[in-house]
Image (tube, rainbow, N blue to C red):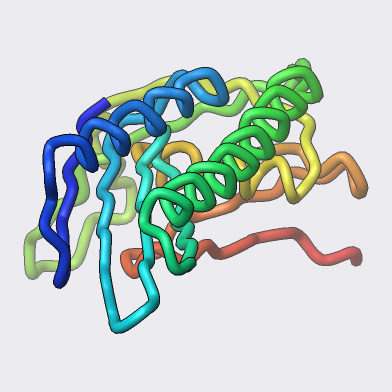
Amino acid sequence: MQVSITGRHVELTEPLKEYVHEKLGHLKHSFDHVVDVHVVLTVEKHRQRAEVNITANGVVLHAKAETDDMYASIDGVVDKLNRQLKRYRAKLQRHQGAGRKTSMRLRHKALDVAHETEELAEGYTPNTLAEEAVDVEVMSMDDAVMHMELSEKENVLLFTNEETGKLNALTRKPDGSLSWIEPEAG
């Protein structure tokens, strides 16, 4: 776990840094996959605020706490993060236990499309660059969204919607938002 601490209008003393590291070390008990932690400690008049951003398994969590004592603010923000991480861990465990493989396997092919300006011949078939079979899981829409949030690598998730029994797709757009594709009843 990589921790960076920034101070705004506050001197970052060694005891303060050690206290932050000690408290953040307890987060490992809630969730094993914490990768990066950024802490911002701010003092404005009588308000002392602690803000923390955590990257864990592709999910970014944010929490802040504000009191009149910096150590109390640190305690408060760590408590909030602990609750958030426990919720994500529980949701992830439900997701892993709930997903069922179906007998459905889809074939995924990456094709080499010609970039010629001329029209393609009627019988033209592009070359296959890569091919793989994909197992499709049965899951709820919430579980599919959680799966996409926790995976930075996947841009497309095919799943069988447990409510409708139909094949659905969830895609990640370039701006990071998700798009849901579901066949209409017909």
